[in-house]
Image 1 (cartoon, helix red, strand yellow):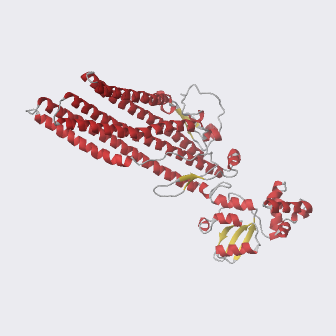
Image 2 (cartoon, rainbow, N blue to C red):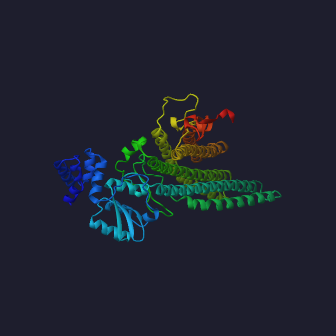
Length: 549
């Protein structure tokens, strides 16, 4: 084998490109390091065409270099294992019934010829010789991946991952809608309970009489609304208790590949190990070919899709917390009603009903509180994630660093946006880059929606606190401090209400500040009007200002 390697490069000596000793040293280095001697020669400054001419002369066949125009038949690629071909260092250009045209590193090696005949089922082979790196790049290019990336880094597999993400976001949107239905059911229950309480209170105060018809109507309406609310809420409660996980993988600017491991109803996503040389490749963005850039941009869009999934997960958790708080408010109403009835009326069979109302309200309040705790953790984690995502570098910053430094006094600023994220920076000549920039804008809006969901959850805290505080205060004012035990219960209710209110304002006020600052809502926006018959520097702009609305 060592002799063959030397003979393949013998022409370099005759051409005066390398000496006998230099070539022998390259062969020894190749044996010691495992590198190909041709790659070592190229690193030592030997011209590529000299190496290729030497190989072509030895094997008596044309040479081929890597070029993006070398496209393999898609039907042919489906029949062979591309990863195996990288190891074998040959790739078929075309195949007919009895013959094949093949690019190979060792064209006349008997073992290589036998492999080709066995895999392609042909007898006649027409060879072209190429360097190992060129063969691997031809295969990778036809797999639609950049150098050294796994097959999962192709645009089609990445699009598949984004489709799974979109499906999961749709499921979480359905779950949030389901939770909203549950909260509406709880509102039915609260309304029904108030109707029932009014009817029973009238009956207990005034007894039976001609007003009993009205009391009966109130009781019947309340019972119907309560049952209807339970029919809305109980299925949501059963489905809503399923735990969801909001922990994403860690994106690293396109140097790893996001993959789906088990496509199906419950896919699992993971990342590949860092790809060798991917960081340096991405850093040299301006020297990449358009198709290589589009592959990186597809990876960026997939990372953005994962981020939107994470934020949607946090919003779903907060929606569950709001449903739990609605349950707590329903329980608080029951507690207040039960305490008032127990204190207002003396003994009798009604006390069993009053105690049942009080205990049922306590159970509902505690269960709602257990829904609240995970939602509170999700809200804090969501805000932390939004800040981390916003602090990172966007695709526009990476590809086209801003030439103008400093803030624009004509555009509102917001902590959610970087300078590249404000309206007016939309123009691009690459559709893939534009899609990626738009994906980043969608992520900004997803971050904003997460902050607004946190604000809504904070307002749910405030409503729950106001309800709890009002029940305690109302009972204390009406009954006074005639009993230390009941007074302590009232004080506990009021203190819990104040804590909920304060916590709610801590969540709501920063989000409201961001909403007022958000330039997507109040800033000017410029949209480039393309005219492909003129240079893009001369394209016009349509300007939309908030004052024109």
